[in-house]
Length: 361
Image (tube, rainbow, N blue to C red; front, top):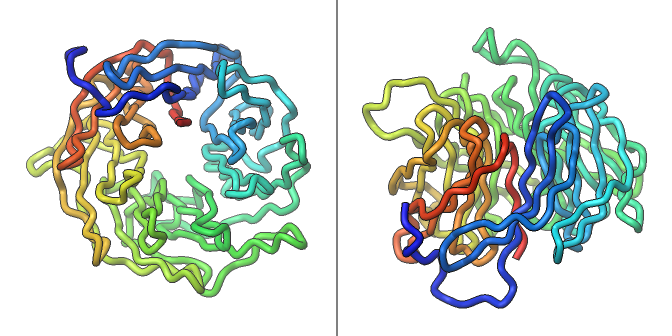
């Protein structure tokens, strides 16, 4: 890697801020703030706050609150006051995640509700957000049922992601254990998650759907399937929230025969490309998005220069991608080619056990 490659073609007065969670079972976890240098891709740490064992982060739409799921006390969802200038965070309050093994947290586009997915508990919880950003007690908890063909990973339901779709009308929950994407229509007046009609979309058997990303147009969605290392492209009905499969593509290059677990997925802000992390092959796979059909075409694979890339984030301008190597103890900055969407690793920063990366412009 070299410092000479630029991650941006334009100068910015306010460098993007990366917020990175270090997860640790021994209580030594933290939330870090890093400034990204757009020219070199280097990250400069500006803040570190001890947080016992965060597994995922979400920043509220106002940019002043941060939410985390922590694997402590059976499972916790925490709210923090967030200073986007300094990167500092201060705890506001904690609530039970309403299930074991919380793995994902999200906030709706208006900052009114937060959602948490509990992998081991098989539940999804909904929380009202107070005016000061604090979490109120969960107003609804729904439990999933069923399983899948993999006896080791799919003996029970495992919600792995929860987030509102475009316009906040529906909430989507890929469940690794049941090979389904549950779809809910929130009843904001009563604070309930009501099943949509249809209530779920099934992906292929043994896929293990993990994370979901929406195209900026709202027409398409893409789910990364952890167990068989594929991406399922889906067309979305804006009226019913339903998802219909378009196609399925591999996240691995031809000929790779090692063990792999696909993990995270995001769509570039332009809508032209989608990216997926591979744990095992330890790479980021790039795909070109067909504007008309929503289908994906493989472009390239770029090594993450480390082990177990669990999550990644794309800077709001679409110039750089930051990927955290959970067991490689590093975050690698990749430049995004503005013509092809291909990636090039340009800088590496030592970060202890990075389990989640989010970014602000």
